[in-house]
Length: 376
Ligand code: 13P
Ligand code: 13P
Ligand code: MG
Ligand code: MG
Image (cartoon, rainbow, N blue to C red; front, side, top):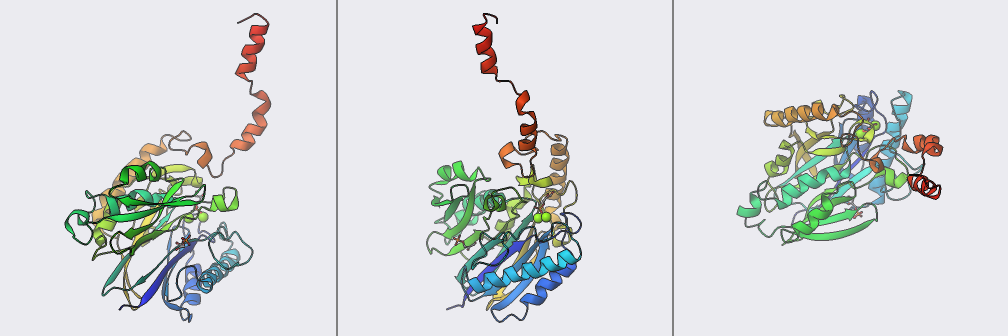
């Protein structure tokens, strides 16, 4: 029997260098110092994508553990102090609460956690993105766990042939539903094709019930009741031996699909797979980035990481993303490059509407008054 391990990935933007492009190394050092040597933690790894700090923590305390969540919260608070001292941009941006209240969910940071019995060999891939939202994982998770054109293992690996169960969340009405793939993929796609509202939260192996993937589904704007920054998401995926191969997990990112986010959280753009060294989006604050770190777990120790998109085989995806970025940028303030109104984060629409409301003339009233007057 392997050890029961919990893998928690907790992220927050607590201040950008410069603007929203990157994290200052002092913040990363602060986070590393606070996590390493903590008695609750088996192992930890701190990284960043764009302006988001990602804390990767292994422990034995299980999911939703108050002490682990409080530790992460305290790390972000301490990093915020550094960010304030350096006057970094948007210091404390993602910390919505004044104090920790028992569970980090709902307080601003994004979180994905899974608990499992460590296998003989336990490869995991952690995906982390900036300038986008949780629904960005829908298309790749669908391809990884339900599309045989992406994942031949679904056809040829007897341990995967049964398929997977998908837990889908409705982020607006706060509901969940389980879909069984492949039988119910047409029903499921009705929902997950609308990634601004429906997000794949978890994927389970159908025969064993084992957890295969989990994503962060926090939406800051929904929590705060107003738009205050994108919910740059993370996702953990277990690989090999009944789960998708590492290469099957990475393959969807060879296609830079369109996601919501980018400049001011209000534009649609291609998700560009990059190495950690290239994870600082600058062009028009983007285009949106995704990094992938691979680890082998060994008694909870994080062996690695391997920077999985630091591979020239993803050059063409990056080139295509740049081409798509050029094409979309030429739309300027027009949809669908600019998101539709409900999705706009820093929208001036209510202000402009308020200013102009007296000048909008009702066409119905105009028609009625014309017909009453006998004119046309
Ligand atoms: P729940 O919202 O299902 O408790 O999720 C907890 C978790 O694992 C976060 O990813
Ligand atoms: P972040 O959500 O990464 O902070 O970016 C916000 C933004 O306004 C980018 O232009
Ligand atoms: Mg930011
Ligand atoms: Mg960000």
